Image (cartoon, rainbow, N blue to C red; front, side, top):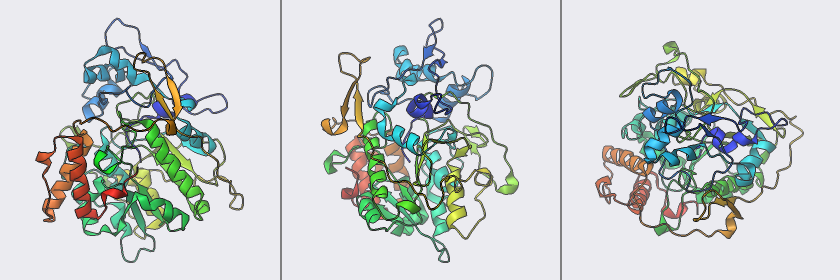
Length: 469
C-alpha cells in the first residue's frame, strides 16, 4: 500500500479503444482558481517531483471541497470540480492550483503501467475514507478508524481490533507477516505491540520469497520519509517524494515474488491509501449503513457516518493466472482487503462491522485455468520524469539508475511522520516503554526518523538497517 495518488493521476491516460478503462479522454477539466479564467484541462506531463510542493490538501474538509465545492459536503452544483481551487488555496498560489491536473503516462510511469496492462487493473477501487492516510490505513486493517477522519487522532490506532489479531487466534491455521522499513502505524496498535512476531524488516523480504517462506497474508509498508543518517530514502510516492522510488519498490517486490517458488500461489495487490488531494473525475459512491451487520463508530468532529467512500485510487493485481489486459470494474475499497483475508484465512467469519460486511472480496478474480500459469514478464526500468529548473513545462526522462540520490537538506518533518510518532508515543506510554526522546523534541525530518526508529525498535523490534534503500 503506497501513498496519496489518485487513479486518474497515475493510470487515467492508459485509456484507449483497445483498453477501455474508466480513465481519461483528455478533455476533462476543473474550475479555475480565479473566476473568469478558463477551465483547467488535464494534462499528460506529471513529473516525479516538484509538481505537488506544497503537499495538496487531503483532510476531510479539503476532500469535501474537491468533491462538492464546499466544506459541508453538500451537493449544490457540479461535483469533482474543486481540486484546482482547493490546491490554489493550500499552496497560496493560483497558478500552482493547475498542477493538481497533471497526470502520468506510460513513458513516465512504466512499472505500474506495465503491470496494470499485463495483468489486472481495478478502475473502481476507492479509498475507504474521504480523508487522510491514517484513517484509511486503519480501514485497510480493521474496517474502521475508531471514529476518526483526521490524521492526528493519536489514540485511534491503539485499540482497534485488526485482522491480524483475528489471524492470531491459536486455532487459526494461517499466519501473517508485516514487512516494514522500521516505521508503521500498526506498531501503535497495543495488541500488535504486545505480540510482535508478525513484524519483519523489509530487508528479509527477497530472501523469504526465494526460499518460499511467505505466510498466507503479507502486508508491505513503504519507507515513508527520508532517513539520511541510516541511508534510507522515501519510496512511498507521497508528494513530494520521487515517484520513481516507489516504482523501484514495486519492481523489487514483483521480481522477488516472480523468482520464488510461491509465484504460482501468490496474488500481489498494489494499492494506494488515498488520493492525496489529486484530481480524479469519478464521483465516489454513497453507502447504505446497516447497523445490524455491526456498528461503525461515527466521527463527531467533523460529523461523518462513514456512509460514503473516498476518491478512487490506483489498484493493480498481479498473478500468473490473470489474463493480460484484465479490467476489473467491481467496486472495491480497503475494507475489501479485510473481508478477503477473513474469507480465505480466518476461522472467525464474523465481519467487524457493516462496512466490512458490504465490501466486495477479490478471491474470485483469477481468469486462467489452473494448469495454464503465465511466465513472469520482464519489467521496464523506472524513470525519473523531472522538469529542468529553467523550464518547468519541459520534461527530461532518464533511467532511475542514472540519477543518483542526493541527501536532501534539513527540513521539517512531514505531517504523517509526526502523526505516526505521536500515536506510537501514546502506545509506549500505555505500555510503560521508555522513550529516548519525546515528540515535543521533533523539529526536523531527521528528528522524526530517529524517534520512529527508536519507537519501532522498542515496540516491534525492527532495526533501522532493515529499511528499504
